[in-house]
Amino acid sequence: MPGTPRRIPPTALAAALLLVACTSGLPGTGRAPAPLAPLPPAADQASGSAAAGGGALLAAHAAFTAFSPSNMPIWVALEAGYFREQGLDVELTQIAGGPTLLAALRAGELDFASAGGPHIVLGHLQGLETVIVGASSTSLEGNIFGRPGVQRVEDLRGKTIAVTRPNSISDQAARAGLQRVGLQPDVDVAFLASGGYPESLAALDAGVVDAASLNEPFDFELRQRGFPEVLNVSELRIPFAVGVIGTSQRVIAERPDLPRRALRALALAIHRLQTDRELGINILGRYTQIENREQLGATIDHSAPFYQADLYPDPQAVQAVLDAEDQPAARTTRPEDVTDYRYADELRSSGFLDQLAQ
Image 1: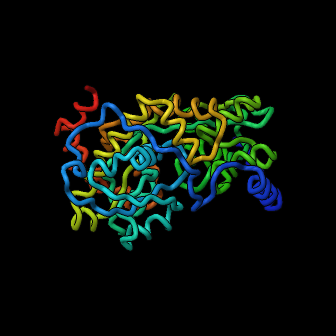
Image 2 (image 1 turned 180 degrees about the vertical axis):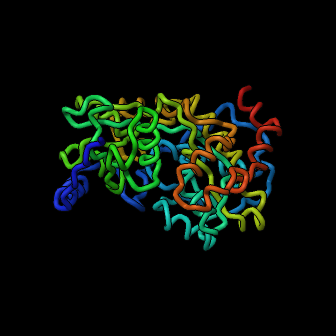
Image 3 (image 1 turned 120 degrees about the vertical axis):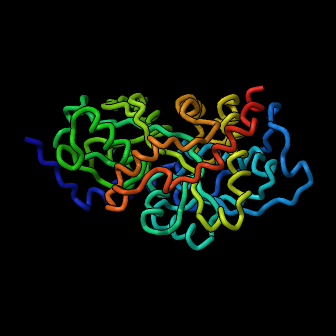
């Protein structure tokens, strides 16, 4: 018989959120990154850039949904000049996932976005004509950390775990991980949507929740402070479209070259991330405003192996997103319905990726 998850008093949650507002060095929505010195060009950049060929730059509005490592490829593509190299003049902003992101894509205010797969899939299921064109990572990442006394997976039974938002990667990682080890989400374990990773950390720190579903760089602090790691979801390698590049059918119809150029720039960025640790540390520190270089380095070391330079949206990973979706339409939707594979297929077959390895 499953335990009954305890109810979180609203005043306790409010106190934890007030605490994170006062103490967190991490960003809120719309915060601009700190200034960064100009980056040196990579010695192994692929040739054939549209900009170098004298063509006009395509203006593009892009966004990312969270200040998390899954969005690092789009940061590097901008900061290291890969978007411009591929003929794109990109204006990059941070935007909340879910309805805010989907409304911006539908209204044409955004041309493409780096986001969790569930956001783009949900837009498709709601008839908003969002589509996945690439994926930088296709397996779930994260860890569940417990408060003192919550040491083992079995200790989570009847407890409450903080996640960032419903249907977020934090939420999906916790649910899929718990199912793999024999616990049923919403029956054996309850969830509290905190609003963000810093808020989840603060809620755990304040004792508002029993555990929290987190990812680097937040894991580092908890390990340093001796919080028990109850479940390492990353090690389970559960297929899931974690970091995707989403756009709209309208952009594909009206500006078909834009996703092509964006994926090439992102492939260059991922290769750079996997071969230039210092650059990754500098850019991650800029966007998260974390100054601890050991913490930043640990985050890069953890995240870089999960990135895939071919940006191929693996059908099994997209299907996992559909399987996790509550909307009835998801039961009859196939990965190819929500994914346009032409750009990733072209990236694979064009020889562009071979240049990165030289």
